[in-house]
Image (cartoon, rainbow, N blue to C red; front, side):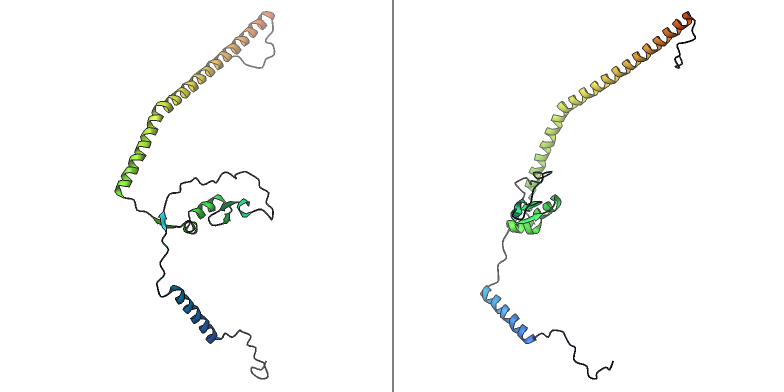
Length: 199
């Protein structure tokens, strides 16, 4: 337990040669400057983000069983395959996040910036949407309303018929009990042994 007497130097940490690494860093910087040729690097010009012109297929593999072996290509493995980024995503929510994400859009050659709409474009879009809503209301007003009215009438008729049938059943049951009681009285019986009470 002597602090300094007879112990070896236990310095096991690696020593870095700072001069050597400074030379390597300087060499790398000079190589980068030579690649640029003294001109500033132009940023990559990407397209503005645009609307997807195809439907994303999320349901084609739904509920299907796939046998996967070691030789199965990545595109046929379980999950959703992105052929642009060459990756497999395990569920539909993450696949949609990937498709709408920055990495995928960059691989498609698009930036995440959206084109600003002009006032005329917005007005045209409102007009188109308004026409669609009016067409839906017209279709609904005539055809759908008639279907609903017919269904309500049929339900009401069926309910009334059921009530009438129920009334007839009760009336027939009451008549049979009264006839039984009269017959028993004529024959001298107090009843035929039924436990039901008459009204």
